[in-house]
Image (cartoon, one colour):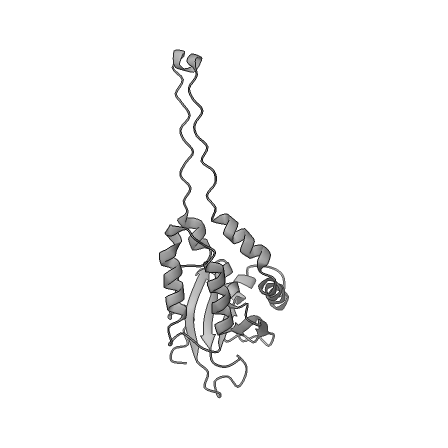
Length: 201
């Protein structure tokens, strides 16, 4: 099984009395071996640590943030991406997150499986993640820069002596795969059914 980060929406803050208070946990997305920047942006509305709804851990190893503010922050980020190749995935994300059935008061981000790959205590890693979510601008700039295609380097012209001795010209530089960094943002993987499913819980 892949170690994943899990994103949910919920109507109550996770805790011992969450079920008694009519908790709903709606699957939003999951991501293998990483915590994509889109997850962090969606958690960036007044983020705080909270108890996990997946793992029985007395420490606050999950994050919670305001749903509507998170969506607004994500939309601001996505509005800066003008690549034609990304527009269908951007539209899909905004449509999914604005569906009434997916909307709740909060987003919850569960990264226990990601943290478990390291040696640092889970709570300590979660506190580091919280600080990242609170200060996302450097990562946002880096993500936007990753979408800028590298300049195309034309092949060197074949000189007289190269032609004379039958040397083949250098091939052109390979085309840049724009879809890879677009997907790497965390787009294109929206689903209400995650590995840990709380639909009937």
